[in-house]
Length: 326
Image 1 (cartoon, one colour):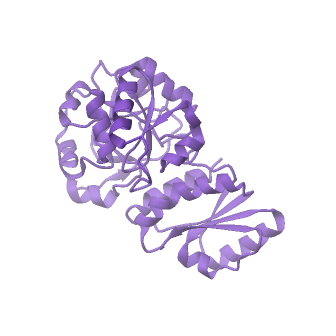
Image 2 (cartoon, helix red, strand yellow):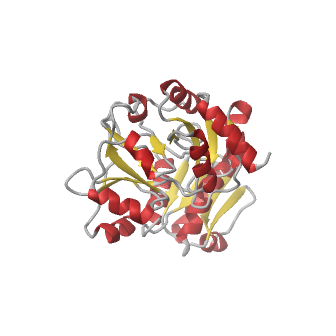
Image 3 (tube, helix red, strand yellow):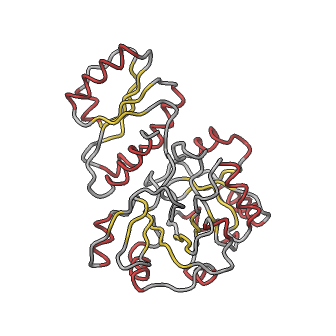
């Protein structure tokens, strides 16, 4: 099916109250009409997602904001000018017309304008904002290729194919509604990027046991089937790998080309290379795809390298840390 035909079919399904998987520049989303609570319930049931975990509304034009939010703070305007369309989600005070199922009963709604042409055209043709969490079962690695969506959902979810996503980790989520800007979820736009635009310090939110203000703040995420253990140093990595090989029949190693080239790899080890340690954008682009590959291989444990937290490294380590929790 041509992209244009798939987008048109996806838009028809969205308007008819169905859910559709589609590519964005970050990861694939599982979308529904943001104004249709019945359709949105299908997202939660398909993903197995807790209903107190709010969703993000995706728009194709700033004019759509007037149907979602009550006001636009000056700091939000600065961020929109700098990063939209792109991988930044901004929290706004919501219009009363936004269904509570979108916001988990909160008075705020997260909105972003994706930069992927397929996502933008789908929203335009659907003629409605589209809510879309990542297209994966809740808690599993996000889908970054249409094959991942097929593996997760089979033919139960229509997917607009778009190959591999460009960035590979979710959007950054920020609120500027309080006294100070706060990043609620680390993502593709770094803290440093945002501070440069706003001209002031930006805080990082802690994970919460309360109702989360943003996706990615409370629940275990991104976890492969096998337990994942984070290791800091090459010397320590080799020692831990040797121990794991004695204990487990099949061991996974997730790391940079630099790390893997230094390790002594035994026959019962599967390595997945993320790329150059000095190119964190490459690491982020490959992260979820490599975790997905481990699920297909059925390794018993995954030993993963830690990365610097500069720039997008903050998001990489957030995903890896949450994948190792539980």
